[in-house]
Length: 246
Image (cartoon, rainbow, N blue to C red; front, side):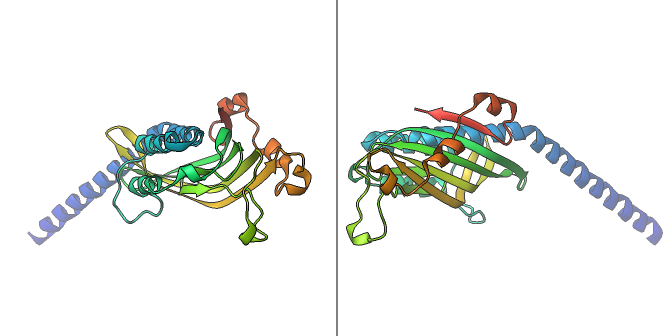
């Protein structure tokens, strides 16, 4: 009798183990089929974020709000670091765009690399490297990124008491070497729960007559790093791509 009970236990354990293996294989296969959708989701995110930063005044804040509502989902789990939908909407609400004395007039972005990994039953971790080149009328306009609302820094910080933003137009190349997204599957498709970025760098080049002495960046960087190439983007969308928003 004891031997029969032991055999039943072994059979039951084997069935359960087989079920776990089958479920794991099924989940992994399902995630593989979702990767193209996840990749397109974050690519659309970068395109829409870049576009949302072009404008001024209340229109700009409205664009930011629409962008966040479109790409983020409500998320209250504290296990993932980064900015949530509610964090970003609160920052937008408290941002004074009337004092920035200048606007972003056009932009280009260049996605360098995308990596997608499964995270939990219905989650995905995406890491991305990309650059954005903004054309700015003057001043230090605000802009939204994956970590929240930021401000351009076009002036000279050598003496903060006398800091003055640029009074002429300029280009700002913002480099994001490591941007991380946590996405979850929703009834409306994959949405971003949290986002953040590390390794952020910025370079500026100015269009005035004294750009040789006032520039704090090498203009050639903007020309070489941000080169839209729709052919390369279509052929190698996993690692490289370039689009423009004007």
